[in-house]
Length: 361
Ligand SMILES: C[S@@+](CC[C@H](N)C(=O)[O-])C[C@H]1O[C@@H](n2cnc3c(N)ncnc32)[C@H](O)[C@@H]1O
Image (cartoon, rainbow, N blue to C red):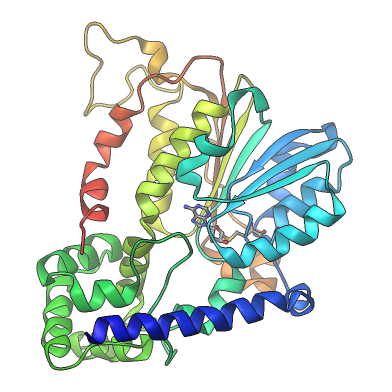
């Protein structure tokens, strides 16, 4: 019953967000720092024209910079409804060269076809500054508001996960997606608390986690950081979205097309690095864990002609201007003409993420 009531509450919150969305003027004033933009532009060379897919439109930093070059077209997508307002501004300015879809990049195949022949497909993972500063989303440890953490097009909120997911799964999610050794202890503490009173705000969750982390005074970061990261990943199914997005993007790219990903934490970067290595020419075998079977074709695993040898990171100057960029890692690969027929083998490598993210509340 309480659950129902709180959903009513949530609707009220969304109305507030919609009101905010209508204030287009205030959106224009929010400062954006598109992370590693200069490196991206030098990799994709928009001055030569072509079609580009921006899979994480956010506040439109990359799309806008690409559209400044007159021979370019941009197809952009984002799961977040707040991004639509920025997209509408660009649509007015570039009606013939810009398209926006409110969609998850895991469903890239729904909106783009191979004949689009994109020159590059770009992912800039994580949250936009707009989402982070929206207190109604509950991304901040100190927010009193609804425990939400939805990026958009979700099937559950953090409120659902924290209050209703069984404690075994909850502990596992915190451990694996937060790389948090105390996952089980934290889940037990949450379970004890929620039996007496449902947990409604980020602040409440953050203080429960602090209570479970005994020596939290020794932490440089907020001791709830890893738990918040884990729950956010689960609520938004971020890792399986990334794996599926990379696969769909690779299918769309033709010879010479570039796949670029900017990631912000080690779980994401591990997936990107593995993906590019798994499908690149640089190895004889795709993986020592998955040696080729007799009837398998080597070409099925050679999809990128070259991949960035070293991970690229932001300059000191960028980090001093935009602290959020400090954990950014950029990797890219340049596609060859082999067709992508075997994505399942890569998915198998990360089957534990698929299992964990598919847990139903
Ligand atoms: C770091 S921001 C992108 C910022 C953007 N590059 C800019 O310059 O403004 C990441 C964006 O990706 C979106 N996003 C995250 N996961 C997504 C997914 N699976 N599908 C579509 N959009 C996603 C988020 O909603 C957010 O707006």
